[in-house]
Length: 124
Image 1 (cartoon, helix red, strand yellow):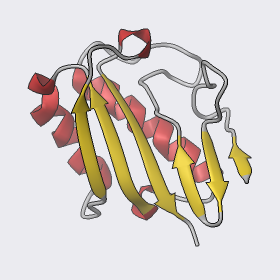
Image 2 (image 1 turned 90 degrees about the vertical axis):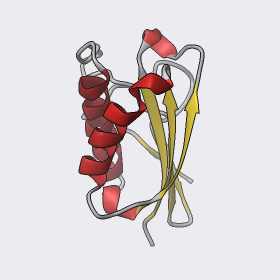
Image 3 (image 1 turned 90 degrees about the horizontal axis):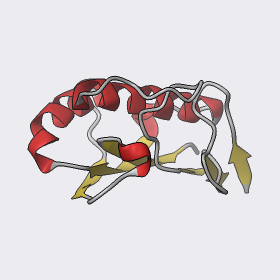
Image 4 (image 1 turned 180 degrees about the vertical axis):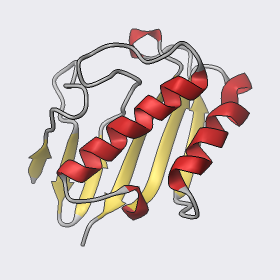
């Protein structure tokens, strides 16, 4: 098992790794819309989702992967009323690649952000 850690994404704010790589599979921790220096991205769902994808791409790159290798994404959103706007960013960032996905509305996320996304990717 290899721990993935990059300064290009925010440090974990608890006792967990940014991602773990094992047997060619990468499991990311949920990424929230913090910049690498710990600042919260913009107040709207689009800006926050963009930052989450920047973070995911940084973590994937640190493991030698990209969004194109993601096989499953789990999206946690504070308000499903934001779903269409979140989905617009999500679709643009993944492009033609469409991994499996679950989306769950939650009562609260760390730092009271609007979105958190975790991914599973296959590297081998």
